[in-house]
Image (cartoon, rainbow, N blue to C red):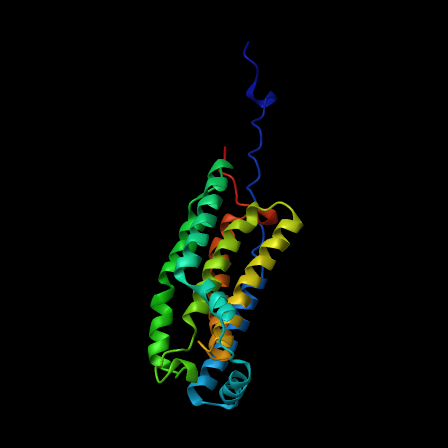
Length: 234
């Protein structure tokens, strides 16, 4: 006689995989940076107290030299794009090798954000039409700083895609320190050489903080606990 089905109940289905909570800090930084960018832009357009103090500070710090010119060049496309491409290729290789879910999406999203940056920066420059420092002559279109934005997005996006694959605290701190040092060097070179007013740089940083935090929020659903990319289900 065959065994009764009641004696062998069906196993319970496995519980659904719970998604880790989305971190709150990208949204908070995005909101704060967005408000600060609007404030600085308003001061630049209205030539308010911040803009006037900006010009006084610039007269005291501008000392064009070879070192400041070289540091400003770290924000050129010829420098930032190769660095970003190497970082994206390495991160994509690691993710595919680890069997990450949609391993191609973080590099593609970071590259797309970098490629779309001029479409945002150039219209803002033309709309605001801020004159440059005296060293740059009578031309306009200096706010926000394009070199600052290129460096911030390229180096920042590279850090975002590399971060999940750095397994030690020392490596992650080193990555953050390197990214901050490169952006500070570009900012110092631009202001010191007289290429941009200080507010051009700070405003561009705020705008790029908004874009990078938005990128982090977009990539958030792909990351599991600890910030590591999710693996494909077996």
